[in-house]
Image 1 (tube, rainbow over the protein chains, first blue to last red):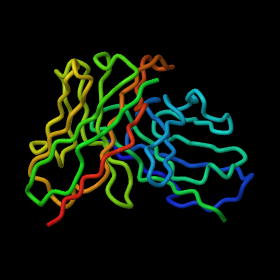
Image 2: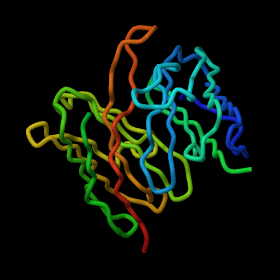
Image 3: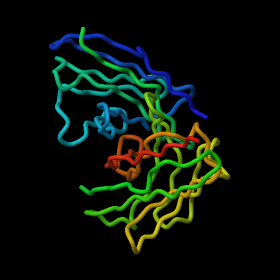
Length: 107
Length: 125
């Protein structure tokens, strides 16, 4: 099984900050990675697919990069609505696996 | 875009069974593979099972294989998860999601979107 390790697990930031979350895969997964945002009590919301393609309707301050085993999600100029938990998901093979999550809260 | 609505969650005793459903609307359900993802209270997301558009190919996470059965009825635009031999570790919110497919730099890529709002399954005595 492919393991995804996100870092950090917790991140305190302020509005306007640039935030970077890393997702490392235990083996190469090409660009078969997606990023999600989840708020308490809600379903996950797709931000990025194919490692770097921004989902329609998602603000351009979100961006994704990477391929193989190392990926990053960057939020430029963090907004109040961005305080949430973020997950990466690999779709290279079964079983599909998620990272453990990164909670972004207010500093 | 499409909409997914889960139902059928509830309280069940350890060792019991439950079938949850996911009703799809706004898209041609029969074209798409579908998936179930769960989330234990206060924990992260965990993939459970996926099924191909025709239902001929299914995949399961190791801990549910042999206990859970994913199925679909394309005529009813519905996805199901039959859960048997439930344990407390199966407690959580169960989400259904569509497996989107599109072209990307490496050929075709997949992702889960949209998602339903989830249905809560509680296994407790």
